[in-house]
Length: 263
Image 1 (tube, rainbow, N blue to C red):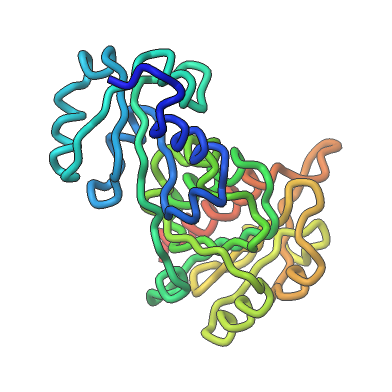
Image 2 (cartoon, one colour):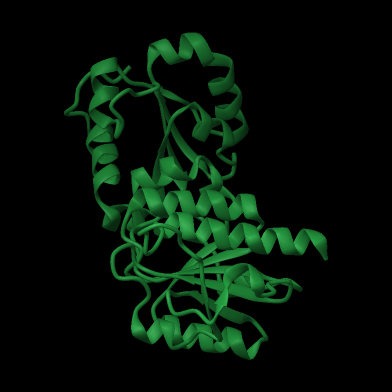
């Protein structure tokens, strides 16, 4: 059992929690909690750390998962685990997981893709919620501008509730150029905008489609907005002008899902 916060492994875990650069250089990220642990694919699981109390309650799960991954779990004393944890009430299980390597062909492939394009999303919780909702709505892939918040931020990971393991995504350097290439392949891009000519549920997303979702405070950048094939709007009542980015994305994704179920 590791009992000191000065331990080298503990220092590395804290650095992985805080530093994107280290996560990316090692090609790993951290996950916490029993649900995230249970859903972690065995071929992505690299290290397991647990408290004694968690082992007493979920020891079989840990042993089986560790054996399937070809690794051995390590115990952390409660104060050490609390030091490493990114949550106020740690559940006693933390893992190091391999980052997924995706490419544009995986994101945009398939006969009838439904894509989500995120432009400068900054809130980790928003991004995590969008990823989880995208899986539920049947989105085939997510494309993000390079300045979006890190998907492997611990807060983002928690918000995905496991969807980060399964939802294909890529970061791209030049959003406009990538969108142009996808348009050449027949994908139509729809931008949620207050000046949209049509209400969102009056447009068909049954074919190859993608939604453009902008920054929480400023919306889509002009150069991204210019890439849209069509502006659509979500009508508002009262004095509300717009929705949270994650909520707006959810409305659009599930409308597309509804239409595609009927086809």
